[in-house]
Length: 155
Image 1 (cartoon, rainbow, N blue to C red):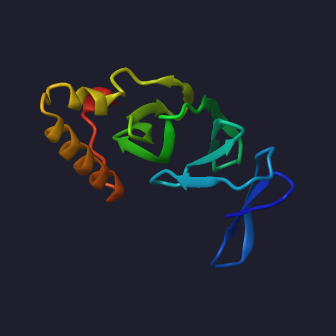
Image 2 (cartoon, rainbow, N blue to C red):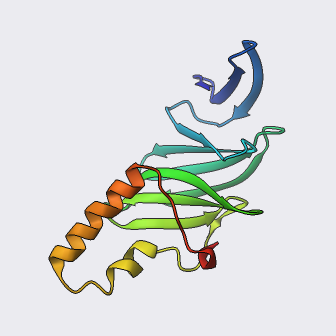
Image 3 (tube, rainbow, N blue to C red):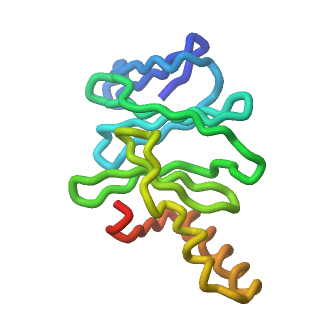
């Protein structure tokens, strides 16, 4: 993937060195990209002027499938985005520093899946601050190691 100054993202086949796809982004700043498991969807994330811009593209034809803009609050800093799937269902996990996870539908990014504030729900029964701190550390380590398990009821 190569982001150019004209606002497009170019995908190359490294085996043949041929151009595969070109995605029109509309901005020329740096961005983060990630594919889903079977490489049919591409997520592009950009942070600009206090907002996160998230775009989902179909890789088959480079068409924009869904988009959303999330205003960044001080405590709401996006750490990373990951695709998860269960059977035919696919979701996007948005990992935030300090405030947890959001689950969104890649086909309609405006829709936040009910029960997506899992992090806060898991902290509720912990009355002891030391336990909460230990849980936060453990949760961070799990996220860093890319072990994602979400109950089927949230998919």
